[in-house]
Amino acid sequence: MPEITFREAITQGLAEAIETDQNVFIMGEDIGEYGGAYSVTKGFLEKYGDKRVKDTPISEAAFVGAGVGAASVGLRPIVELMSISFSLVAFDQIVNMAANLRYMSGGQIKVPMVIRAPTGAGVQLGATHSQSFETWLAEVPGMYCACPSNPSDALGLLRTSIKSDNPVIFAEHSHLYGARGEVSDDYYEIPFGEARIDRSGDDLTLVSYGYGVRVLQEAADAMAAEGIDAEIIDLRSLSPVDFDTVVASVQKTGRAVMLDTARKTGGIMSEIVSEVQERAIDWLDGPIVRVGAKDVPWPYNRGLEQDILPDADEVVEAARRLISF
Image 1 (cartoon, rainbow, N blue to C red):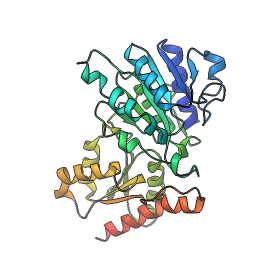
Image 2: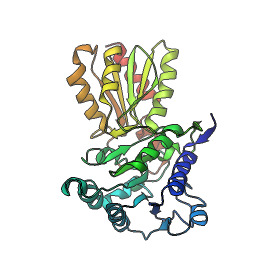
Image 3: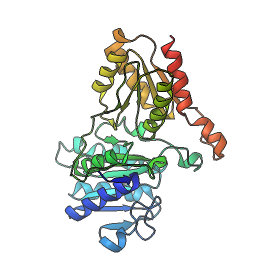
Image 4: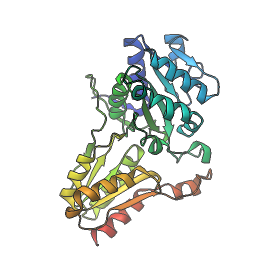
């Protein structure tokens, strides 16, 4: 299979959608002439024209609202936020409007829109550009939330997102755009709520999503050198969550470490820990351990930012404590 970057996988998915569905258009700040803050839509304006690729004013509330309106009358907008941190400006449109219109209309109004957004810290963008609000938005009923960790999943989940008749938050960790991976030439889609076993193991279960999976892979390699056989679960989507796969893994290994690259407090892993406790407590050989970012604003200084961002060493240390419990 050919190897492409995470960025190229998303670009491919967007191009496919525009070329195969006349109802698809994309809009956002600097996505046209500039080519997108992360160069995902480079060349799109010249190739597809300004009816399909729309630069917007700097007003997330306005253009997300326009996307909700367009979706409600039959179009399939793909809205790009320059950062998921800026979703706050459009929270009323996202949470009150996009997520609720289908329910409140008794199914008469569908909202088939995708909101793409870079997320996460670690690339020195400062406190107001480094949030991970996919963990907030995953809580909203009526909305899906996809968080790919590799190019293959990015393409498969994006295809599913664009075809969905419900709004989707598509969170792309800023650390991943240059990550490379194999992507099949054959057409495929990846359903929401279907986690992936990235690595099989018998000693403990490691769970995360997005960039966190990369951290777990590094940690699992280090553990293997110490004789610890770790299993990695990549959630892929945060709404819905594939609790069955996580529970089955914990029942096999008896131990679990959950990683939030967002803040530990209020992260999605708290919900997963709770579900595993309810469904698999009799299989646990020790407490479920959570690893996450420190509860402080994200610094711009690289050294401070890296100190706050959880890394493989923290995961390994947590695993050692759990194995010796």
